[in-house]
Image 1 (tube, helix red, strand yellow):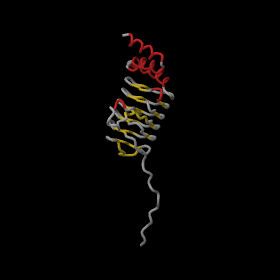
Image 2 (cartoon, helix red, strand yellow):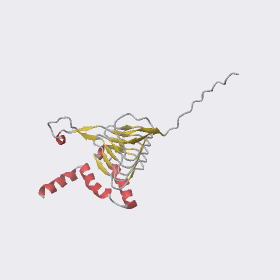
Image 3 (cartoon, helix red, strand yellow):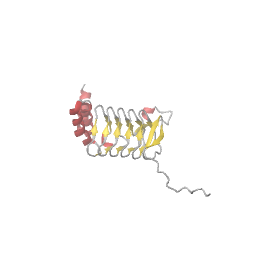
Image 4 (spheres, helix red, strand yellow):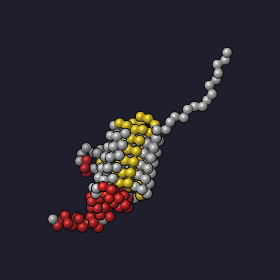
Length: 194
């Protein structure tokens, strides 16, 4: 019992440790009052926080001090953001319910060492301005989603190159469309000669 109390005291001396204890209360505080508490207090722990950030109930953070969030972002119900490698959300990003963004992964290349003893690889994640990730999307470490992308519910986004304003879906996510209309060619068509 003494070792548990000692650990709690040690945790409370650390700013992230204090956040983790407070987060247990803030995370599930119900209703509009809970929303106001989360919106006011949680962004103070981000590496950078814009204005008008909305944080819904059930959100979990790891390494919150490595999370950068732009203006007018919405972090959805039951999101889980593992920012050990750094996560940046641009402006006007919307995360649907159950979204998970990971910026850290276990190393697993040495067959003679258990995976949980091989350490981690950190790769930052960047979600561009105006992106929307639907319900239960999983984003792998190292992903860079450019401006305006929409990711369909249940998709798994891996590290590869995506064009701006892409519509992504699948496991793994692939481009299935683009939100920008194609520019029609305005070349004149030669008239037929008689």
